[in-house]
Amino acid sequence: MTTLFDRLKASCPDDWQAYTTHPFVEQLGDGSLPLECFKHYLGQDYIFLMHFARAYALAVFKSEHLDDMRQAAGTLDALLNTEMSLHLTYCARWGLDEDAILALPEAEPNMAYTRLVLERGLSGDLLDLLVALAPCVVGYGEIGTRLMAEHADGLSNNPYREWIETYAGEEYQGVMISAVEQLDRVAHRRAAALTDDNPRWASLATTFRAATRLEEGFWEMGLNP
Image 1 (cartoon, rainbow, N blue to C red):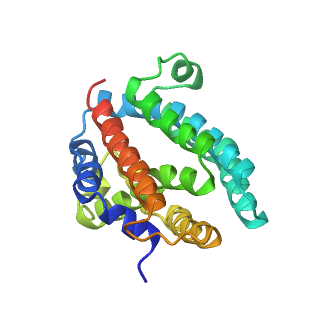
Image 2: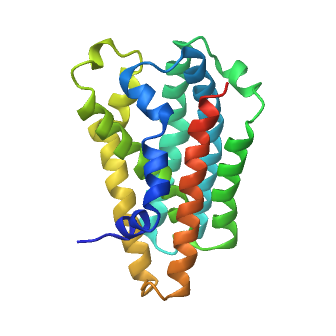
Image 3: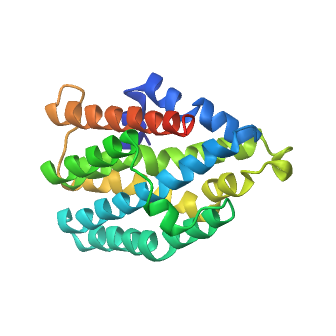
């Protein structure tokens, strides 16, 4: 069955390819990414997670059904009380503590991406917000799975092995699958006949493409510490 996410991804194949196979990603996969680039990315990613948590808090407010509220609240709790703590532990191995990260200026690509997500949630409904979040949530899972498969032989010597294993792992893959399923569920509940000539479809596809291009910009930021 073709999901809404499949259709959204198919609506901007070149942008999706540029995002998921960006040089930053490929260098992560083969372990050649310069350390300073990765540390710069890690610091900005922590700031990103703070705004991502705000987006899921907004998703709770925007939800009209308890199951969507519970899913958004669960993600919010996981971000604030688990993932961000784990991220700090990981950052510490690379010489970054929370005070140092929070003292960093927020990079413009980071700001542009996170504010787009929040704006789509504030001005639109839950479906608009979930579509804006989807390139990150699903894209990282897709990237992790591919890098794990393509670089399995050299992974033991890759300094970024843990990053790859996290997003290729069963726990994150479950998050990704749930996000895809929720997109379909929310669209169905809104009786959204998302045919190609439907204005709502055009709006969602525009949001998805913009978020995908900003994800590419986030990687580009990582290459320019």
